[in-house]
Length: 411
Image 1: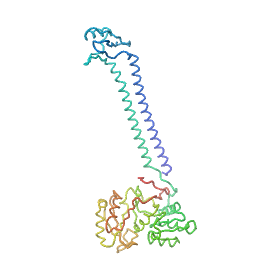
Image 2: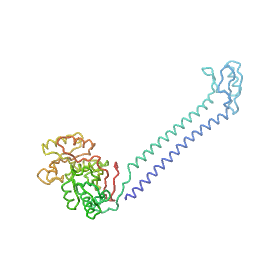
Image 3: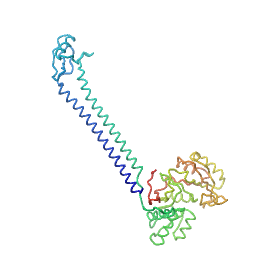
Image 4: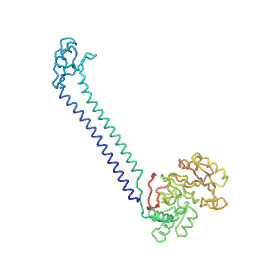
């Protein structure tokens, strides 16, 4: 299914949900108005039948007692001259049937049917109010549900389409080129990332510098490999010693979670990458779709750069950290080349900074990546780690249907 068709289905679903909510709201309003109408009808009928101008009750033995015939006629005032029993006899005679008036404990005779009629009206209004309240609460819940659904399924912002059939390297090239075309301008200071995807962004910068499209630009590489590539393309370079403020950095990632937290450092350049990207106004993360994940950890080992001094001790401390230990499978010291987490030599891998790397392999997702990042950073012997928390300002993805910007928080 294409993204256009998916968007159409989503629009239809949202419209149906809103329409159903509106219909149920109208039913709730109709129920409320119906209850009000019934209440009004009850009061009007009561007035028409029994004329509220006549008292509902009278002091027993004083003045007037109300007599309500079983017919539709008005109540007939009857003088009271005798005892309560005599009054009852008079009432019986006037109505031809036993009256509903009974003596009350406080000396008043309250007519039951009439009182019940009057009690019905406020009860009906109360029920109508409750019905309306329930209807409004359910409406609010449905509206909140619709808003939440729309927020959860926001469409991707598509930059390019029709990438079906492209290889992974072709997708990486497409996203690398697109990031430079959209974000790099003349006069900027640009951070150049490290890795197979970032290499295509560096290539594109070189092309635009050579063609004259980009002028007065200077770049800061994040590894010796990137420095060598940039120099071969004629890209002007400097370091953070000369420029501590960077306009935009473009780099890849090994994993990206829905909150744009990243795992980086598979190529061994995590320290320099973090130093450059942390001082950038914008950090554009470029990946292919295979790097997206529901949570960090199991999909790619987390690299941690440590000092060579007592490195085995530091590895044990890192493996025992509270935010790490419950989910950790094993901690493995990187061997051979520092640019790969796959063992390719007998010697301990050494980074560009002269340090070692321990790769943390997880059996489960890290439940609290920010806490893990903080605990790693606070461990003596750890130089830095590959968790990039809250640093990306945009994630551009090359997928089977095109190049798009992910929506932050999208599961």
